[in-house]
Structures are given as C-alpha cells and as structure tokens.
Length: 287
Length: 143
Image 1 (tube, rainbow over the protein chains, first blue to last red):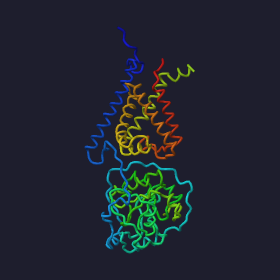
Image 2 (cartoon, chains in turn purple, cyan; image 1 turned 30 degrees about the horizontal axis):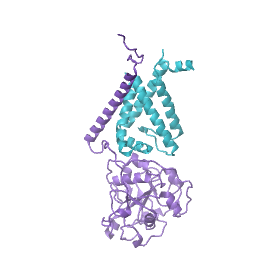
Image 3 (cartoon, each protein chain N blue to C red; image 1 turned 120 degrees about the horizontal axis):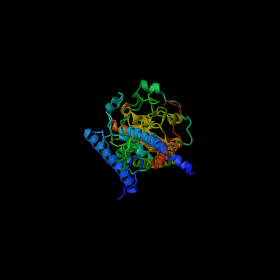
C-alpha cells in the first residue's frame, strides 16, 4: 500500500478532495466564529451586536400620516419654547443603512439669492408669531459640526414669510416623512423648518438651498452625536441631497430620528427639483 | 513562458505572496470585526446583496477573512487559505468594478473605518493586483 503524494506546502497529502475539505473547514470555522461573536455581542447589551436579519427602515409619506397625530407645536407656548435651542437628545445605537451618493448635479447652481441674514435671525430667533402649524421660524444651526455646519443659519430667511394658513402641519413620526416640493417650499417660505444639506462640504459649496446648513451624513455616521446637537429650535427638519438615487438625505434623516427628533422630512426631489423650480440657491461654504 | 511560470511558482515567491496577502487580510479583518454596523452599511452601499443578508454578511465575512489570513501567514492549510482569499479577491474586485462603473463614490470599506479608499480606478487596480498575488499564493510550489 503506497502513501498518497505529499504536498510540499505543509506536508499534507496533495489530493483534490483534501484541498476542498480544507477550504470548507476554514470557511466553517470563520462562520462559527462570526456567529458566536455576534451572538455574544447581542447578549452583551442593546446596540452591541447586529440583528441577524436586516429589515428596511421605511420613510412615510406626509399624506399617509393620520391627521389625528398630534402636530407638535400647535400653541403659542410651543412657539415660545422654540426659542430655546434643543440639544442633547440621546442618539439610539442603531444606524441607518446606506450612504450611497448619486452623481452630483450636472449644472452647478448659480447664486440666485442673497446670503441669508444670519445675524438678524440670531438676534431675533422667534420673530414669527405662533402659527397653527407650530412653526416658529427663525435662526437655525448645528452645533459642533465640522466643515460648514458649525454656523447658525436661517433657512428661508430670504423668502417672504408665508401666511400662517399656508404652512403645512408636520405631525410627529418615528419615521422620516417624505415630502415633495410643494410642502418643502411652503415650509421654506414661512421659515418654518431647518434645512440640512446631507452632502459633502465640496458639493455644498458648489450650490445649495439658500440658508441650508451643511451636515454631511458621512460626518454624522462617524459621530452620531452630531445629529443630537442639531439646533432646530423646535421646528421640523428637512434633509435633502441630490435627489434621484441619492440616499444621503434619507440616511441623515434616520440618524436624526435616532437622535430623538420626531418631525424630520426628506425632500425627495432634492436640490435638482429645487433648482428646477427656480427657488433660491446659494454657493459657498456659508448657508 | 515555462521559465516565467517556474519562477512565479518558486517556493519563495509563492510563500512571499502568501505572506503579503495573508497580512493584508488579517489587518482588514481585524479592522472590520470591531464595527459590524459600519461593515453592514458598506455592504449595503454596493447594492449587490439582498437587504436581509447584509447583516449576516457583515457578521461572518470578516471572520472568514481572518481565519483565511491566519492560515496563509501561519499555516497549516495555507493553500486552502489562499483559495479562500482568492475567492474573496475575485468577489471584491467585481464589487468594486461594478460600483465604479455605476458612478458610486463611497468609501470601499475594505479596512473598515480605517480605510480611506474611495471606489474608483485606483481601488479597482489595487484589487486586481491583490487578486494576482492571491493567484500566485494558490499555486503549488515547484521545486
């Protein structure tokens, strides 16, 4: 009886099935280690391990939300409370999925609007009266972000404030709310929302909704506390990016929801739809 | 041609390729094991796997990479480790190429958060180079 030929690599018998068996063994050991590690992490505490099956986080449409949902901030007291910056909400450990970006807009927008009057809006953070929708409208900002998100901004400060009846009611929701141009435009005109640009600082500088604050999702993903430091002054938050396949605005919205906010809108058309409608855009690093 | 093949399959060359690829895989695996949530998102970014499987992939894949890398560096079962690594490299190169072709520009996630490689030509050809090394690592050494 003869021995099988020896493999110079490690002295193992050089046989096809042997190599296949070794490959299967290595993969199996890796599988067992991975499953065991994740099971241990899941048992160690919430947010430590990954759920075994990933489920899609959904975005609801504004019209699908029940009208019975209490629209936050429907009283004058709420409007007054909105003068106090809100920060410090605890971010949940879970993270949104996906950070894919689409190709940037082919035609970078030109500055069609003057720079927002940031100083004025800081000095008078709640100049707008209480509205039925609870949208105080005024100074906004993101505290502690790097890049261009550190400066307060007033979204829509260049537009004429809309009549109170024209401001959409944004109910509280545990999911981001998808909003179209019509809703977003009215919020903007009423200075009734904080606009957040989820793209990179470079893309933001090429053109953005005038008055919007740059809060790149990549930064929030690395440091979820940034989402908790958003200074929305009690107003809804509108996130946007390049529209189309761009996931950044949705992902940023999920992060903001995880940080405790409950009125977060995703502008589905993004900057391209905004530009196409001829609405104010600005260039540069400032809002 | 035969002379070139003989040189490539020289035991020292094969061992060097195994060491290089093995160390790269061990480093990449250790970087990913620490943050499975980030890996899951990177898997999602490629839009190649079904959503329900993304967490499973993120949970298991780095550990298989680690085991294969350790096998390549330390042995035993070096060739088996090389085969696993070659399979991974073919998969990664395809994924990076597909993402590049679709114009996606996220970080590849190859080394978890430590990696700064953005999807593009350089990352694609870097992967092609590693795939060639992994191919050499699989070769049975000729004496």
